[in-house]
Image (cartoon, rainbow, N blue to C red; front, side, top):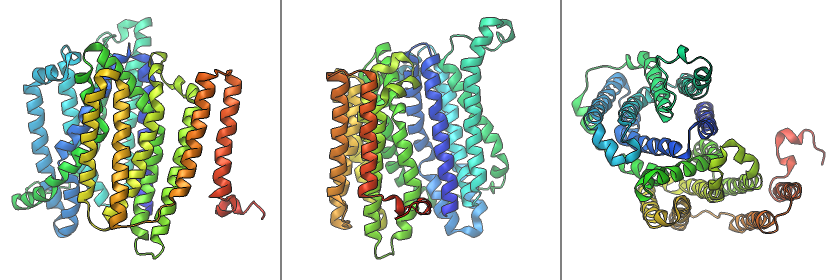
Length: 494
């Protein structure tokens, strides 16, 4: 399990990082921030639709393929039949009503209804291929799973570079070579086309795995699977809406090209802060197996408390590092997006709260009260929607940033207090508070030095480097002696 977790986790993190690397290119090559706003909006919609189109059947597949292992091919085929049917129906509806959907999504799509149809096909294929990917996991073919996922991302990146960087240079020097397929001002359209080609290529790669299914659906089995899986749809929708609903609602709350421009800035700066999310994701892949492996140990609660402590400590370290050197990180995105960098501290804090909330979620998983996970997610959706509606019309993307902050902060606190009632853990709150106060104090000092005192650049970076080194030294001195790390212990004398 540890080996497979490492492969799945590493491939996922690498994949996210590679996709993240596209953001700087988008901000520099797209004509203006409003175009990236379209990208942000349409991918938020696809993330939500993907949850709808899989409707919990991925989890249902794992439940029934293990329950009826002697009929694995039938379970697999029945699941594929269900997802294929709903995906084809979805594609048909998108093609029939593409103009109406484009109008409902805003003026940005009015002249490009093909964006809707292409992405409709993409999300339908993604939903369908989720099941062959699940089948690879069931067969314990972790390497094949990871290779296919990374190949899909690699194809997407290569095509993005070709359409957005290489083709404009060819067009400038010798347009006759590519004028039969290339339109210079198509911009966002090429991002969508690259996604479609990479998704279609993945479907082709998975065909051998798809052909292993028994294509004779068992409708009694399907009924049972749907009864099991559909309730999971509610939890899935709530979870994904906490991450995407702000980017879906934004064009309705801040209309016109200015709304899309602000959404583009918000989406790009949100991506800058994703370093914290990638750390949280890496921690999650390691932590979840650890939680269930430690559960029967008499010292398990102490281990959970220590894990929480170190997660928070190193999250604050990342928070400080990114904020201290934001003027270096801002070079990742084009200058017309820099005005939005003020939301990065808010988003970083939101990701930190999200990570703490995930740590706290162990209590309802270990005592089989997962309904609380649904309650917390639904609470988060209500908070996110309410605050976006209340704030965005007045303060733009700052409203979305603060809504995300409030969402995760509140559900983190609610999960903690309810969890202490059902599964009390002695989290080291004094130590957590100590590091939190120190980190926030250092952040305030750096902000005052930069924006109030306006000290010169060299002095500012010297101050920030000293504070960051001091924070790291404090961690080592108080909670992470170097000699406690086996590799280092070989080289450090007492």
